[in-house]
Picture (cartoon, rainbow, N blue to C red):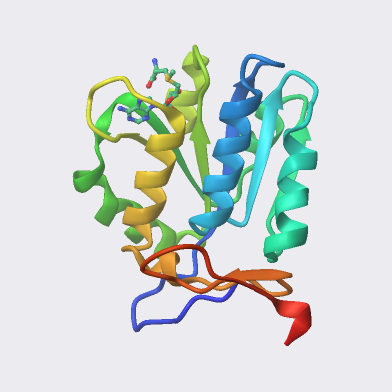
Length: 190
Ligand code: SAM
């Protein structure tokens, strides 16, 4: 994915960790979490919980058509990732502190520590340990809603909206924005 650079550091490498994926029940939400991560600037999503179902295949099918290097994988034990993460850890939870207050602190920590951000989202009940292991517990408002919505808002705010103009390499198809109807270009025909 290529993103235009500004004077501010915007080249964070964001990995999303999706906790507690439950087979069948969560497949659609997990797939949406993967698609939102890809479209809004994360470099990868790691699914933990039940052994993977169709989420990995359907995300890879999107990569093949729409391009980019977005990575999706499954891990048995989330502790392996969280305990050894060499960067900043942000957990999205309605119990956290408000996003607006934390964004400058998160950016500062990324500048000082490393540009690698692990962004944790839950499904149902998140283990208590996660709250302590995370550098920041971030609320996207203190009302319950959805991990997909929380993820989208966080990514958009950390990138200040610039990720919406990203382009993906090796795309087979590309949309020409149109005021009416659908305009899609097959890149192979150019
Ligand atoms: N008890 C959960 C919590 O801690 O936010 C709500 C469960 S919700 C079905 C599943 C996931 O959505 C949560 O683990 C969290 O990552 C995300 N989520 C829901 N509401 C949120 C909010 N207001 N702010 C940030 N994340 C939220």
